[in-house]
Image (cartoon, rainbow, N blue to C red; front, side, top):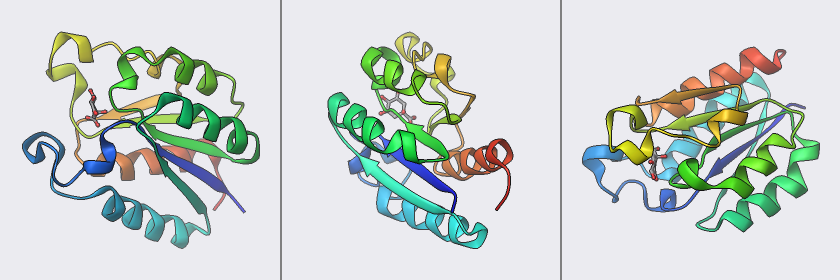
Length: 146
Ligand code: DQA
């Protein structure tokens, strides 16, 4: 069975309440439920994981990266400076798709650089929670099958 890791970095556990004018009103659980429904219809298994700690994400990737088919990730602020997360993603042999709720290129200067995007296959940014759905579709194209 195709297994995809759905990773979320710092502060994404408070989605729904956190600056809804920027990040929308859906909670992370609601987003994961949507993704799960789509994945079910493809016969895929999703493994969601959120951490406020870079090391937690690195540990999860070390453990599950070698036994998955792809990674969908919103690294949160680690996008801009998380070099150990970047190294963990670079070590994977499966495709990585990065997603952002907001358009990181239309915000503060410091958000324009993504150190993690440099090791991802592509980035979906600026479509709210639907960035995750579009990112999952992108992974389907990259992984193939159903
Ligand atoms: C974010 C963008 C980041 O700059 C920010 O630190 C986040 C969320 C997004 O999804 O738009 O936490 O990754």
